[in-house]
Length: 161
Image (cartoon, rainbow, N blue to C red):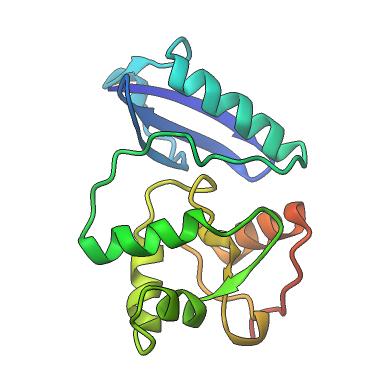
């Protein structure tokens, strides 16, 4: 397993991957993961991902759809995560819309739980999922970071009540 860090405007991201797939993208909790993993900066997959993240944080509309992700989750989670991949840069959707898209129209809370378990921050854009009427709602990394990502992409939202 390989690890590298990338400092952004929202904090330091920790990227974990093997030679074929990205396993996790998360905000670093300042654990020294490099002691447990090899430095991944020379890994072609992570080099590509780092270039795309740099472009993303520079305000470019970037696609991550060809980045191989190590899918590990329930069938329902994977179905929801596939829907996240379909949300274009600069566009938002709601938990209810995703629930309908996965043929579970009454499962908005389950969709929220699956989105909260997303291990690939930004690459699977769970920050683009809002509550009804574009209300800012839960985000694993906190509403402040969700706001920053939405503002970066120019996505309008209503403040949390």
